[in-house]
Image: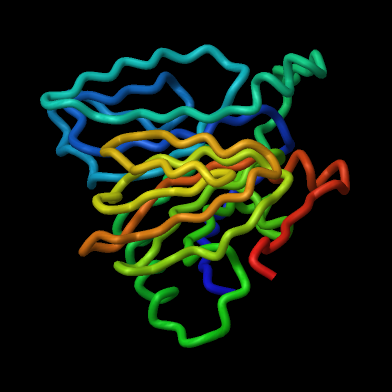
Length: 234
């Protein structure tokens, strides 16, 4: 498999989650009492990082940036709302606040690109796994998140899957995506939405490595036993 995984230790029982990707320089980034708090005067965090926070509990979010920044929040709140599900106040969280640091992600990506094996996955990526979800290869009970990459001149095999995909461009100069035959040129800080079962592929015509943050609702289909993936060039 052309991928690697990061799995910090966690504990507890399942409840709602949000996955937050942030990059560039923050002057202030405070998020309540759930952990993962920063205060004004701290050194800026290394540029892209991914954090997982507890949902269903009161928290304040206060963000300031000197020169523009990105905060992408992906959660399973629509699913929980549909199910009318809430976390028990006395319960312990299944997934503790978790930070996937930029430097470690880059090291893992270097390892992935250093392998000389048959490519069986759609991309060369670092999958972000949390402890209770590691055996299921998920980030949260319903979501799978990863940092994907594609070398200069590279072409991803066209494919489709049951999951919807959100792709945030991190490094994407000269990159474009085909979605059901429609060409979408990447722009800085752009989020691309790939609908379920849409045939898609990424193509890098730039001079640098393509990198993106990807979130999919994979876990939802895993639980329903309806997950599907297929190459479309065979």
